[in-house]
Length: 205
Image (cartoon, rainbow, N blue to C red; front, side, top):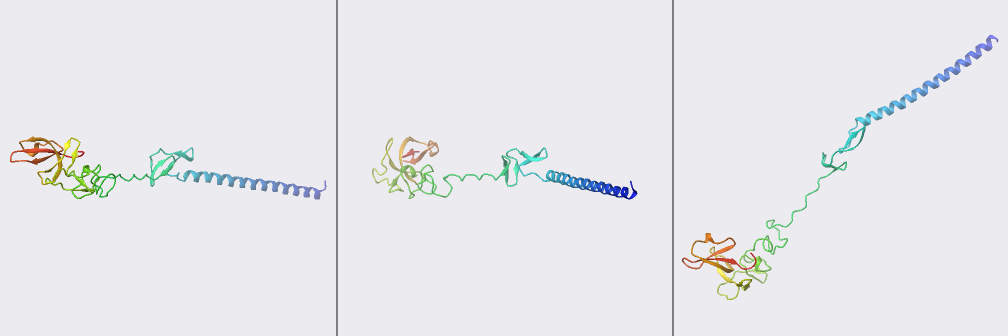
């Protein structure tokens, strides 16, 4: 083989080898960059904090924290942060300053304590004097016969309580002592110098 032909062939083989090396080097570099980027992303994902109600498991934020665990603005429920439930509004009471529920007047009557005189009522049971006329609690008058009407156990009569309050009542029993011995739920009435009667207010207790 002539020397000129040999030199041309050597140069051609040299160039082919160089191109292959360059291609291999390029592919290797690109693959390295891809793998490096993937590794970086995985590392960053591991460093990134999990949501408030998730915890990391095998490198991923997929396990739920126990329900009831505190989280910003509430507690964890099923892997999500839930705001606390507001308490239901309170029901009607006998001291809320509102006429509501079964009350016949403001905070009285119905299932609340009996109303004072001249308050609204639906029956004698709503009035502390046990007399409801024209839907108003009235003051009874001992001079008016039959004003207090009939109760479940018999006729009611207008009595003057020891504190000056008039009320329709049923006589329970007679005592010759002090008002302090009247049974609970009864009202003391002075009927004489040494005679004390304990009366039960008419209507429901």
